[in-house]
Image 1: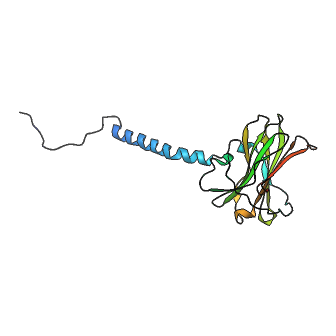
Image 2 (image 1 turned 180 degrees about the vertical axis):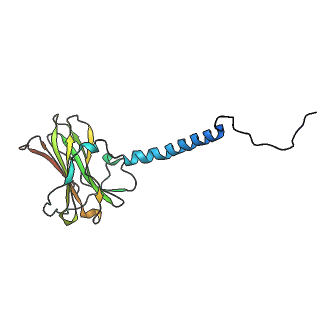
Image 3 (image 1 turned 90 degrees about the horizontal axis):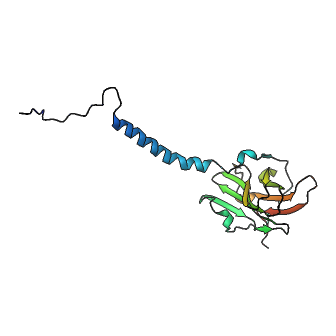
Length: 194
């Protein structure tokens, strides 16, 4: 006759090792943490090439004229996020082959400038993106403009907003390389429609 204790005993972990259920629980917790952390890491990583661009405050410029604001939908603006407000000028094209659109972007308490461009000239160009804000504050970024004829972007560092989005204006200038390079295109966030 078999003896039964009548009760159930909790299984004991194997001698000299960890309980496999705890290991599975730890592995599952690690996977869940990775699934949650990965999208956050990608979202906060920023634009490719941010570290290679030199940026900083520039000398104050004169009063920026506040022309008619142009809010436009553009295929360039895909992927900026639902909570990001964009105020953009028109898409401009120079006879030399530069296409550009410049925007002031606001997300939460941050404001920055971004230009969407395509360089079809066949040569690298000098490009400067300026964000002009309240109190004569200007942030200027020198953009790396290759000759690869591919759509690209350049943006200024984000800064804490000092007023509404309409208090900011962005301008991008594309010129031939060198100190005496000719200006090929100037694109602004408040440029009038053509």
